Amino acid sequence: MKLLVLVSVLGLALGLPAPEGEPFTGYYHSTVGIQEAARIKATEEAADFDGSRIVGGSAAALGAYPHLGGLVITLTTGSTSVCGSSLLTNTRAVTAAHCWFDGQNQARQFVVVLGSVRLFTGGTRITTTSVVMHENWVPSRILNDVAIINLSWVTYSSTISNIALPSGTLLNNNFAGWTAQAAGFGVQRDGTGISTAQTLHHVSLTVITNAVCASWYPGSIQASNICIDGSQRRSTCGGDSGGPLQVNSGGPVLIGITSFGYRWGCEQGWPAAFARTTAFNTWIRARI
Image 1 (cartoon, rainbow, N blue to C red):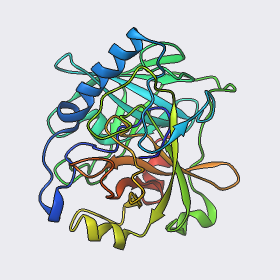
Image 2: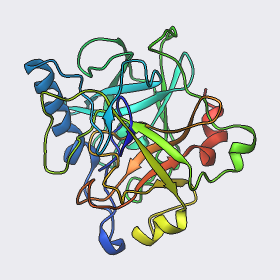
Image 3: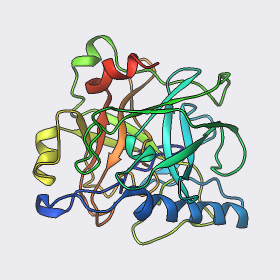
Image 4: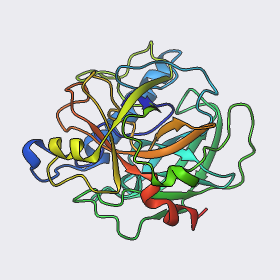
């Protein structure tokens, strides 16, 4: 995903759709999040590294995505995993439901990292155990992949602020053909880990129709998804889940939450899928 800035874990989210519409397999934390958390932490400790990852993107400055919140996740097993989120108000952020529970692995605690280019050090760091998953979250099919994070009060600054949800005429817009942006801490190339030369990355992606997306993932795309074109080898990737897909409409507007991608890689030309925020507008607003 080339559209994530600080944190998300999309790309290869939890059980990514398999080719030819095969059932979803695997679980996000055990297949992606835990190993990426270990790589990012080790690299940060070894060098001057800001923890970012986006496939096909470019470096982004601190403050370019002030709403992006990295998630350092403690699972009930004691393992550490990673995801991303988007700050909506001074006390609420939104992420993917699979970051809290992926169908097998249950999170116990989130540390939300705001205003930092590092995931494991720096910035404003808020610990919370208060997360509300969508009541109809279905891990086996990645349906309703949305969750709200409750936070203690966050003071806005030049590097920390909220992102708007769609409103007005944007609520009826499918955004097909729009250029969107993403950013995150995920891997930047297939088959590679986290290098010591990484900086915060972001990328521009083109939104495609759900019909086109469904031709790649038969039976997996719902009206509540929104997808981006991956044909230019740009996309979200492992470690980006839960992070923002956004457009500019009088300011940044959150149109998607990183959810899943092609199970065999982020540079293979397949679309990536997000939870469409307009589909969850009422649900989200009732909880912020």
